[in-house]
Image 1 (cartoon, helix red, strand yellow):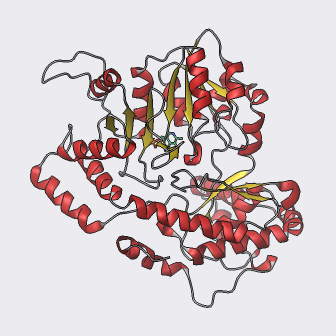
Image 2 (cartoon, protein in one colour; image 1 turned 45 degrees about the vertical axis):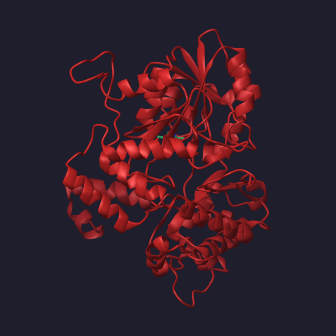
Image 3 (tube, helix red, strand yellow; image 1 turned 90 degrees about the vertical axis):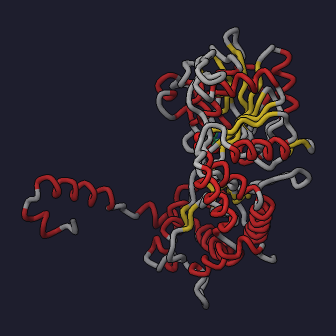
Length: 450
Ligand SMILES: Cc1ncc(COP(=O)(O)O)c(C=O)c1O
């Protein structure tokens, strides 16, 4: 693939990872977890930020500094909001300081209260944005094939206290929006979408962001498109947009006139100019993700027990998550063992979104039996993990990563046995170091590298 000019600097810098003449790890003892040297000198992160044209970014930054307009609906925020609403095809985009505050404001502006149905298989911010306002998140199961809310389960969770549904377009794959719209209409519920992963994606050829009463994006650096920190609410509803604009600015309508309870949810000018610059590279970022996805598919498609996330190629996709599902009954090596093996090779694979919101506090204490109605969630949180993509990796790195996975799975039975014999002394050393740091007995000074 030809590397887009604006990304070439980022891609060249990663030559650091690809030593010439690298020997593929073919045997169990080549793996770093069993004493081999790590496949990568530098850590490969999931969600390493993509950066657009640095020159253009610095020009805009100079301009912002000259103007000394740093926040409060500055010209870059206005331009950013216009660009995003044009791209999504909605009337209003209200830029925010992050996706979590945007969710909180969207929930409040819609008047949600009582109970709201959400998936447990999501980032905890989706649930916290409700709980923060003393609204009960009612965790609903997902369809194990799509990882989004299972419409058949939603109906069972509705009570007289239910006021809304928040669907999450997990990994950028849209919810079954048509079914959710029908349920919401039938029960007179508000429908909101957490589209934190869905920027640049479409559903039935319409851009994500244009569904429900409103949708919320996150532009956190782990997302393929970022504004440093940032988020946005997008909606076609004029009254709702007006309310959201007031709420994100302390309720100010005019100079001294507060007409509403509000907070500070504003996006600042630096985030907006970062966003404008990154928007200019959006197609390039997606192109790199798409090529990486193809490389992972090529390397892993014949590996039994491993399923790579499937995207609907007829729709617009951002391909930002390389998610693998592991069937341990076939691979023998577990998802957690695979993650440990990769991490020792400096591939910082991540369990997403383990262990599910219902297993986190305060929800674990509030709803100790929630797992009983979340069988698909409970199954998936134990099976999936995510691998690096974006401009930080290319075909060479992907080949090496997949070779490690292949070796680990082909030797799955032996690895499982060796790792279960393997005693992890790291916690013991940490504990002894802790004692030594406080008490400093002579023996500890001699024994431990403090
Ligand atoms: C599904 C989901 N919802 C909400 C958020 C919160 O967004 P932010 O980090 O911008 O506050 C995130 C992640 O960051 C997320 O992944």
